[in-house]
Image (spheres, rainbow, N blue to C red):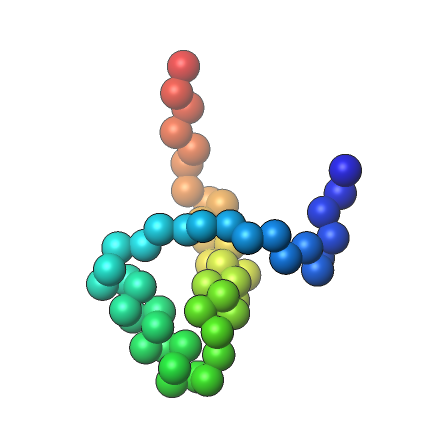
Length: 58
């Protein structure tokens, strides 16, 4: 079953407090939501992150 791009189910993510404070600061600076900041950061970083080697646990 394919997910819709407008699927807005809740998901909990956990960040170190220092990182969360930085994200909150940036969200306030840009007058954006925390969700928008995290989603946009992922879109920008996705290609670089996909270059990291995977950890294969057997």
